[in-house]
Image (cartoon, rainbow, N blue to C red; front, top):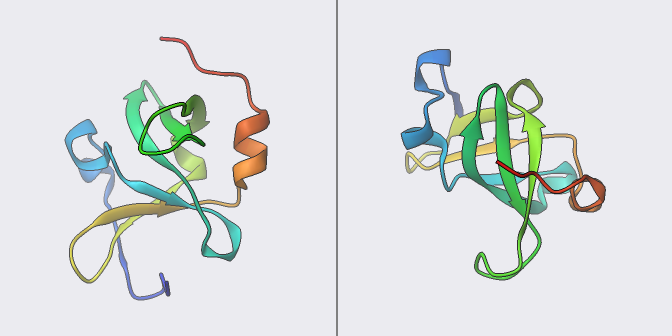
Length: 94
């Protein structure tokens, strides 16, 4: 997916209602997880698992994710993190 034409979200749009469920893409446009919820300045990303079952929640600083909308209005984010790097992080506990 070419993200260059996607519209970056403003700070005002970075709300739980907008971000929850957003797909996270890593290097080489690999789907690496999805946003579960926000926790302060951190985004809790579910990584691994299948259809949300067995996924591991990890905390990533919001500034490390570039949130945007595609041509269809769907919100997603890109990051330099890989799926393996996220899986190696400690599990987040609320």
